[in-house]
Length: 251
Image (cartoon, rainbow, N blue to C red):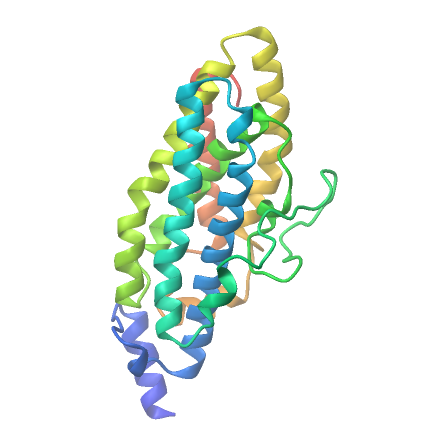
């Protein structure tokens, strides 16, 4: 018990672990949960954007959708390799899980998990065309940017290194979405469609930050897997959304 408490103090003060051999069971459980949620969300996101490629209105936007689809799958693979080092059955992620499966458009999942994987609830909702996908990509891209401020600082050093490599590409996905959104709002019809899509996705993306008073946060903080509570992250996201959408008069 003394050794465990000393380790928690070490992690809480910014210490890092570098090998599965150094990881105690409860830390491993929290770390695996974090990684599974990221991997499952990236694979579900990749599958969702793959379905929008043929909806893209031009070559440039088609390339952007292809890039997002490819890179999100690649990000999932990078984190999945680390999960494999902890004994996870990585083969089940290959082809057999229905990552493209979605709930009804009007479903209300809130922050709860749904189905047989660990994706964030927002990735259970279906797209309705190109404008819808672009709007979601911008909002979720901004959320990912905020969440990366936590993920790049996790106390398991090999994972933090992977997240630091992934972060710039995730940021570029959001910028690609914003470029697409700017093109969409150039027409009156596009502006109306974008406003409706943003209104649909904003509360669903907000739910990706989880319960604002999460009890799990304190455990994750002790292990150095989290640093700031959900409410603070969501507040940062709200500010980012307002700032990035203000020039488009869509906030």
